[in-house]
Image (cartoon, rainbow, N blue to C red; front, side):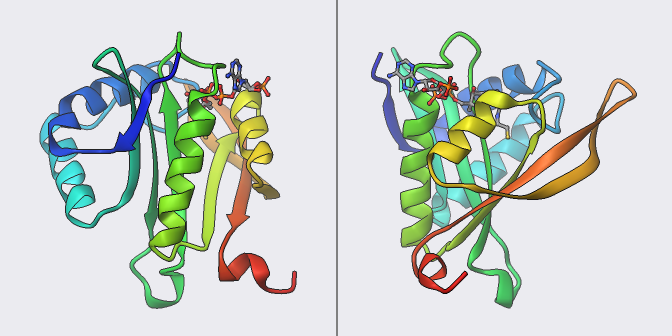
Length: 171
Ligand SMILES: CC(C)(COP(=O)(O)OP(=O)(O)OC[C@H]1O[C@@H](n2cnc3c(N)ncnc32)[C@H](O)[C@@H]1OP(=O)(O)O)[C@@H](O)C(=O)NCCC(=O)NCCS
């Protein structure tokens, strides 16, 4: 299966919300357990399109089946820092779609001057962590009790990828 990977567009707001909502309702991978109301998502997509943000979607047979985004920070000294979020609908995972989405989004983030991409993943989310490692993210720490689902705490791994000038600096 080779879905189209492209930047998000305004008409994607509803299908994007549906996809996000389905992954959120799994109550396992994302911090949110349902998507925000459509009005909020529409505003979010509008601002993303207007700012040419690094937000990409995967489309298969006309259906939006995954997304990946990196949003950068507003504060001056943090403008090179972006936070990554992504998801692929259950049933479409493990076929390389996440990796394609991720690489496209990172390349666009780099063009926009995002040189440090950070994320947190629940520490038992092995598939996501392996994917991030494969594209070059490094482990930076553990956020203890970072997530709470149904009364149970979960640690999260903190990972980051340096690209562009940030990757060239001495580490
Ligand atoms: C994490 C997530 C986005 C990854 O997306 P994905 O499409 O499943 O990722 P990929 O298919 O690119 O990579 C996953 C596996 O598929 C394998 N794969 C890659 N290309 C493949 C191909 N062409 N055919 C078959 N398998 C392939 C990879 O080797 C990888 O295997 P591994 O995990 O055993 O190493 C997805 O699983 C997901 O949505 N999970 C729930 C939400 C989530 O966790 N979001 C991230 C929160 S931090």
